[in-house]
Length: 369
Ligand SMILES: CC(C)(COP(=O)(O)OP(=O)(O)OC[C@H]1O[C@@H](n2cnc3c(N)ncnc32)[C@H](O)[C@@H]1OP(=O)(O)O)[C@@H](O)C(=O)NCCC(=O)NCCS
Image 1 (tube, rainbow, N blue to C red):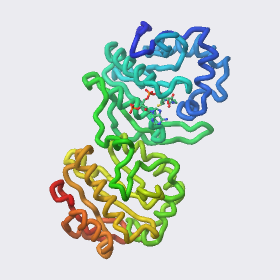
Image 2 (image 1 turned 60 degrees about the vertical axis):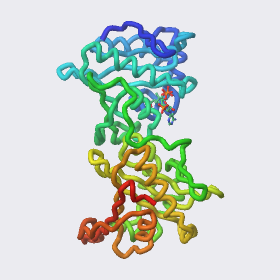
Image 3 (image 1 turned 30 degrees about the horizontal axis):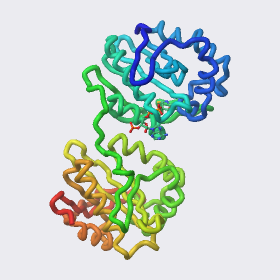
Image 4 (image 1 turned 120 degrees about the horizontal axis):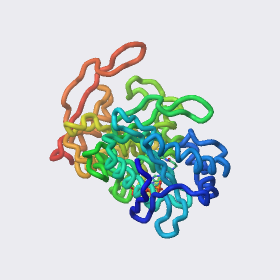
């Protein structure tokens, strides 16, 4: 690529300059940045910044990529960085990356810079741009969506962890003929972040919900109704909570906490799994804490979730799989309008190599009560 300056939505993509060193060191040295860019030195000193300006960035340009400073469009002060590379020239493909200094976040800087950089790279002849993003980095996932990148899947162990080890990364790509963005979202954010009927409120599960989710999902009667019936480890619940937003943003899984709408106390959890995106089919699951049962809260939660699934999420058919003996759960589904559709014999894994039957219920939009 050629290093021409690019003006875009309040930011300027330009070359790094020696005078950027202090801001570069402060921005790159931010803990969130260092967490999601494990290749950067830690601590990130002004000497590292000077090396990047004098040698690192020019080397990226020399290999056919790009290493832009993102500057404030009005003051020209450094607010971040955005680059293209490594380049796979034979495939006209490259990775894209970005970071924004903490003092300039949540103002659309990354979105503006990434859109402009992607457009420039595609003009320069790249056919495919890739973004590899940690599943616990929703801000970056939102930048990807805003810049027209589409979720493709998981690159297993594609990321290195600081201090050793590897981690999965989510793969996103934008092709030369993809629209500039924002990319369509299968699971849109909830209006004002919540769904409520005045008695229960549903909101997206988050990193602070680990304790209540662990308490709920290790209850023997909750474990007995999942397949296989094995209590989840604390680490698995923690991951579930920390990646809830990414499940939403990749359009695969919406996990929600059920709250008492009056007291705000957690009452349980529920979720919508997009089981067949092409066919528009999703599947719901739910569980309540023992003290919250018997008041119709699960029915209300599933009704709210189904209304959102058929409405903003555009789902055309919902299913719910249940343990055949779980009468309370069947009643919840029937009260919402689900019908029994069939017994799928041995569909699910049980304990010690056994298989479990799955009694499946289905709901179409005009049946929702
Ligand atoms: C990711 C990062 C570059 C985003 O920069 P930014 O300039 O704040 O991003 P924007 O202002 O353009 O916001 C983009 C979207 O993310 C959302 N967002 C920003 N910070 C967020 C956060 N901490 N949690 C959830 N969403 C967040 C914004 O609301 C916006 O959402 P919208 O498109 O739905 O309106 C910045 O957080 C950062 O530098 N992180 C550390 C480095 C990093 O992760 N780089 C990417 C590695 S793949």
